[in-house]
Amino acid sequence: MKSRFPQYFGATLLSVLLLSAAGCRALKNSSAFRPQNAANSATSYQLKGVVLGKSPALKEITIHQDAIPNFEPAMNAVYEVTSRDMLLRLQPGDQIAAQVVPAPGDANNHLQHLAIVSTPKANFNTSSLPAHRILLGEQVPDIPFVTQNGKTVTFSRYRGKAVLITFFDSQCTEDCPVISAHMKAVNNLLTKNPAAYAKSHLLSISIDAAHDTPPVLRKYGLKYLNGNAAGFSHWGFVHLTPTNTERMATAFGVVYVQEAHDIDHTMQTALIGKDGRLVRTWAGDHWNPSAVAKAVAAAS
Image (cartoon, rainbow, N blue to C red; front, side, top):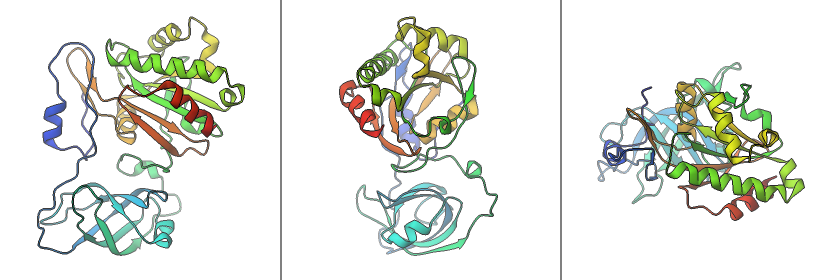
């Protein structure tokens, strides 16, 4: 299986992420690539693009923009929108035009004179848009996956519950067992809070589409459920097609490289609210299971 990185990662970052040691390894987490402003003398640039997603809480939108001469290539980019009315009007699929005002440092570039050029047709499906990393408060894409029991489901199945997800592969011998142990601890802590347990669900998502078939995931999951298959009702281990693995990884900012005998990848854990929107994320494998269990309970 071949994979490509999400568009917002630069070539320099990719070369750093490709490690040479043997065995499954976790890549160091990094922020989304932000291009450097190429022409600081200009005060603004003309932007045209399509809205991919938005976060009212952060006052940000993600746009798949056309190339901006002398400034940025065609890419997915996050921009701040200060007008609340415009932010509420904007929807995925909207074609927009605006002026980009460059911001210093790592701040998001600012948009002014933003206008909606056209809106999608009534039967428009957001899954046809380019994949992008979702923002806090944004609806999680309803990507289908297959559970350890061979059942195909999507995130919408868990609407009304807080869902904690993480990424792993079953052949990993270093960081993935740490993440799975953390998830086991969260699962055990939630059993002590029946109300939160009933209104929550855990998912461990495999990024190894070739190897981690449902039977493999069932065997793997039983190790962390102490052999009790009934535990799958609260903590599932899921498989995706190669295409959907890439879409899911892009949505949650997971970078992975398929090599000859293993997969290198970053570590990311995310909490999805009862309304299907992203609540928060934890990068790496150093997060505290007790704190995460409390966050899941609060969102339940």
